Amino acid sequence: MSRVWSGGHSSAVLCAAVSGPPQLMVATGAEGGDLTLWSQDGSPLSTRRLGPDDVTGLAFSAAAAGPVLYASHGRALSVLDCRSPGAALAELRDVAEEEINGLAVDEGGRTLAVADDSGAVTLIDLQLLTAGRTLRAHHNICSSVAFRPRRTQSLVSAGLDMQVCLWNLPRPRPLWTCSLQDTQEEPAGQMCNPPLAHCVCVSSCGTVLACGAEDGGLHLLRVSEDGRLRQRETLHAHSQGASQAHFLSFLSHPYWLASGGNDGLVALWDLSREPLVARGRKPKGRRSRARAQTSERPEEEELRPAQCFQHGEKVNWLCPAVLEGKPSLLVTDQTSCPSVYSLDQL
Image (cartoon, rainbow, N blue to C red; front, side, top):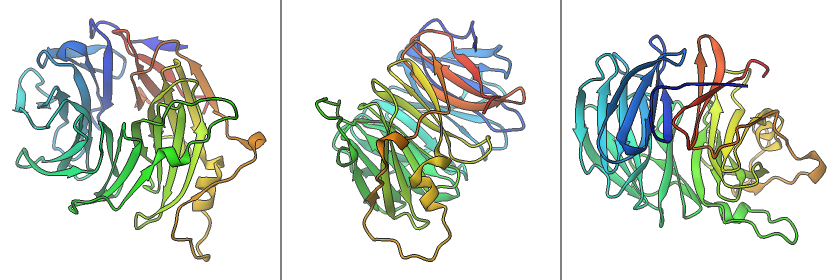
């Protein structure tokens, strides 16, 4: 059963983010420009309207002296001090070429990556609050970006062109580009939706990438320490598009993954049992092939979710968090109320 947080929004909640300790708080963004900050128990702390455009992306800076929140709406970016959220520290207008879809802050709190509808990724200098280099590789909407942990110059992007790109900043071209269409496995006699990439995430060790796609699959990619693509695999996860995929860093190992889809299903995956992950954790000694290989696994051994929640509504966002000392997963959907699921059983 889930707990429902109410009183923060009056329209569909589109995105969520959680700040780090010691002052943990949750932020949610909704249609119509509404932004709400919540306490750990689900009480609204403050609500404000950023403008007429939907709030489509949120990211906290873990390195700031106090919790600083970055919120995208339309082509603009608002910077808020969560200790006094009534007034924005800054607002950067027209920071992206088209509507922003996703944000990511590097661990040093120095750079913000912004993905937009033009397919571009814009890098924002957070000390100067100015737009810097623009990265171009996607031929369609860039839907999601993520920095690799402990590698502040390594950035992953994914888009509706079915491409996942790994960037080694500040180089203007990706280190590699992987087409999810090449990894798609169509069941016999069944037409699948194209694997348009909706959300990309990186494990805390930085070597496993997961991407939720329109074909309902979770596309896994394993990279070496220097960022080379080594192996690919696809999990058949959802009966409709997989809109969200997020690693959970606070459980027993760094390979727990949460996914959510347009089918209303929320699933928890133990990827430590996945051959792609297990192979990557073996002691070194054998030389790796230069080209990425696709894992082969008998159908009867296909990995299944460790736990599922029938949420019932199309999932807009997943946000893993430790709330009131308990491992939890916050889910937003087409309603105005986020839901929180307990992960105590994992």
